[in-house]
Each structure stands twice: as C-alpha cells, then as structure tokens.
Amino acid sequence: MMFRRPELEKDNPIAPQPYIGPRRRRAMARAALKEFTEDNDVEKALQTLTLAASRYVNSRPKTRKPDKSLKVLRDAIAQAEGVLAAKDR
Image (cartoon, rainbow, N blue to C red; front, side, top):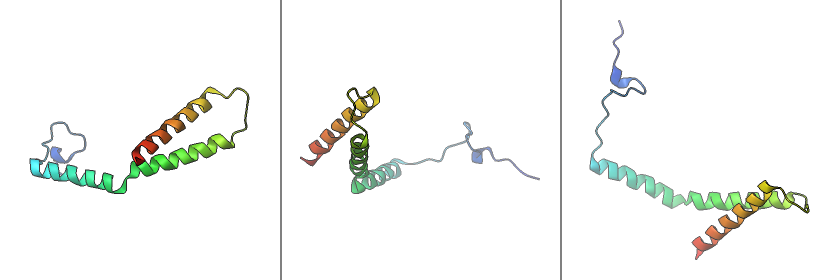
C-alpha cells in the first residue's frame, strides 16, 4: 500500500512551501553575489565572445556590400569593446 504525499509531488501548487527566514534569505543572496563578483565571469565571457566574433568577422571574405547580419555583428562587437574599455577605467 502506497500513500501519496502531495507536498512531495513536483509542481504541486497547493503543496506547502518550506519557510525561509529573512536571515537565511539574505545569506543566500550574499553567497550568490559573492560567487558572481569573485569570478567576474561576465567580463571574461564578454572578452572571449568579442574575440571569437572578431576572428569570425575578419575571416569572412571582403565584399562590396556586406549582408545585414554581418553589419549587426560588427556593431555588437564595437559595443562590447566599448563596454569592456569603460569597465577598465
């Protein structure tokens, strides 16, 4: 005989949620923020992405009229490089 426990079922809207107090909520937020700022993952990812996109654009053959997607990619690279340069100041 198997008893069903609705509080353990996935995606049950009527299941009671465990209580998380304000201290624990703030501690969890600080821990998440600490991980994010220590590694500086966003800046590294943006640098890597900018470098890869620049290599891709430079490897494309030169044409008189570049297609629209290539122009958008060049604008995005310029904007990302501007953000990285402003962050270094």
